[in-house]
Image 1 (cartoon, one colour):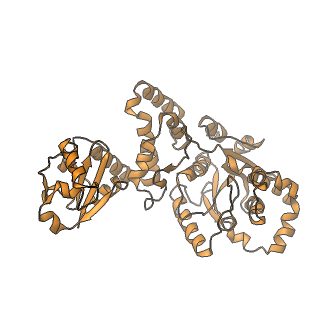
Image 2 (cartoon, helix red, strand yellow):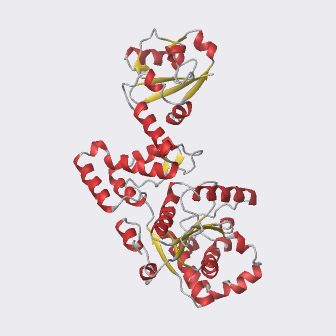
Image 3 (cartoon, helix red, strand yellow):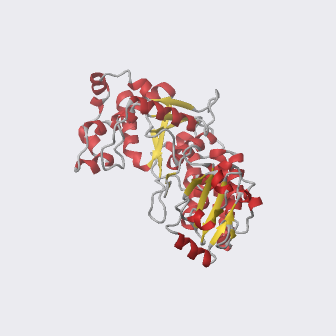
Length: 427
């Protein structure tokens, strides 16, 4: 192999647990490995990028990746890292989620007919053939309750209570590895470090059921330096689906990474070589205010997830919206969607074209007609303090909005002070 996958993951900080013999196996020829994705939603989010990157690294190193969508395990719920029982999903929701997860995964892996072409499978396709009796007889008999109870995912829940449904999860995931091993020649399972117990259950089942050998490695769970959960913003999860998180918001998420986190992110979520990353880190250390690492990270990952056109749009929107000297001509370079994406989190109100054409005073625009400010008095005080802007240009109390203020023939951007923005939508 031209790439030693284990060494590649090690320098990137993407390797935590690894079974003896795994590195040697990966160097012996084309090996098949898999990661599982639970369809808990109809799309994947930023946290799912870690197993996706592991599969992509596997394929880049000359091996064959399998992406397993857990149609069966999704009906049960993985107790790993959970303090409470999951709500079970109905079949219609599960089917919709599986379709969404598959759609996302197909954007990342190279599915072709070569020996390294990716494969996508759904564990419901083989689990549906089992009756309860045959499963506990043919699979369950190979593991003791003592063995299963010793797993961290179970131990942490024993005190508070765990249902038989979730207790059995590791058996189903373990059997997935057996099935893939027997039917696809899959020898390696990968996942997050919280999956180590479930993964090793699979290698144990392979040994006990077939006399074969399975291997495994895991990636550390991603954490943020400030203690908040990775992949979350004030608006919720950062999704890989542009319908759920716009490419602009996605780009901004990575652009706003802290200096403490960005070196970890750029190693995990890009394929940039070590020498280039280290050179960027040296540049960043000299002029951290330029945010060189964050810009490179945001560019690379937005292109990978959403494409070059989406990146170009995100960069254009960012450069105009964050430019204090931007004019209405600059703002009119943006499309309606770029305006809506750029101001997705700010207060918005709608007025009619007739109200605008009749002459809308700035005080009314800020208070009575929009509700952006609580009263005319508050609006008047802000204007007297020279703190109000229309389309980034400061205005006085006597200013009247007109059609000339429209951006994309539809929007007026109001601002108060340095941080408060409001979007007036004219329909």
